[in-house]
Amino acid sequence: MIRGVLLGRDEDKMSIVGVANSGVLTASTLVSSARCKLVSVHITSTTNALFTVKIWDSASSTISGKKEVLRLHLHAGGTAGVVEQDMHGAILAQGCYVEFDAGAGSCTVNYA
Image (cartoon, rainbow, N blue to C red):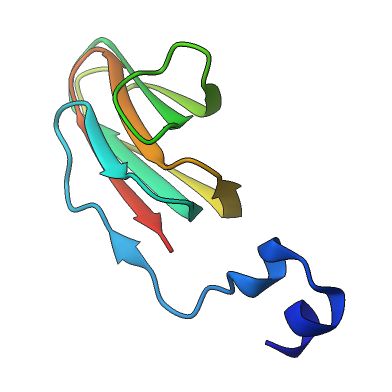
């Protein structure tokens, strides 16, 4: 990538050509234990209760002192509800850990 070479920034050297996919998650999971770019997060729920997912910049399930980069809430009201959040390639320096904080639902993470 010419821009990355000219500017010499690490962020520019991690261009997004294709993305990896976590698959459908239904519980807290370590998606990546390496530096990555967070491309998008999709959550869905059909319950009549609050469903909360948190994304952490962490290389493990240890989140104490780590940076929470995204928190999504969904209350589907008993019908299917879906939220998609485009993260535009936000850099996660340590890794990507998905925490299911409250309620029930599923989550998919696209990253590079």
